[in-house]
Length: 338
Image (cartoon, rainbow, N blue to C red):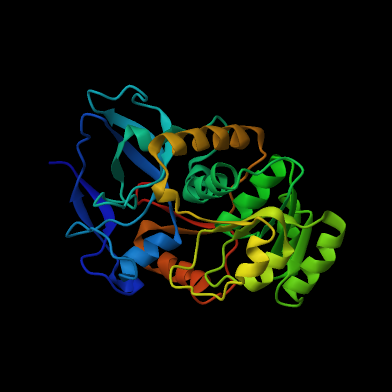
């Protein structure tokens, strides 16, 4: 049986539970595609599953990773969407008992894969997978963003935040965001933000009050922080504004009910993994269009080989859990053969 190299863990814990080892190369099922992985990326959910913070159904030797990009090398007999040689990207692996993407080869059900547009490299496609789908679902499927509206997103240089900035701007919104340094603020401006607040040196909510006197109140507040502050967000929302929550599993903030309901506001909570395959496919088609035109450019903040997956997970945790502010964009990993 042909073997491959993969990152795996046999018990949950700190990043150092990750190790490299040999696995049988997967054989694609009837509706599966075998992808030779060229690039994968790290998301916070990968670290939560690895640490045990999120309980998950796991194989005995679990391969982490949701996102991948690579080349189709084999297809099951019922696959109709792809053929050998196609360049593809996708997400939603490493969940529900499925093995993840930090492997030389990954067998993926065809409904979770999409073509890589011409001119887009594998690293960029992998970097934008989960974050792009998340941002698009939140802005359009859930919040119903319209051209001319005002969008605020915390952390405009991060994975999801950067995607929100770019996708909202491409849709004709006025975009306000935050950044933790002058360098990151410049990056946010370059990717489409109209206003950037330095959260390390400025009072974010005071600055938002100033900015919204010019822009009008916020229609979509896309909250990426693990500890949201509805008491600050709600007064800044326009009538029938939407507060989008996609982070903060353990958060229990105070919630001002009166100011919320008298403005006909909405709170929307969502996780991209709950979206159907068809919903995600429609989102991916629009993301591919934006990738092709250059309206969306997923940022890469760090690169590691698979053999340094523990260091990659540690860097992600430092920025997700400890607010280190040392990462701009996504962490991308490449297999030994690349």
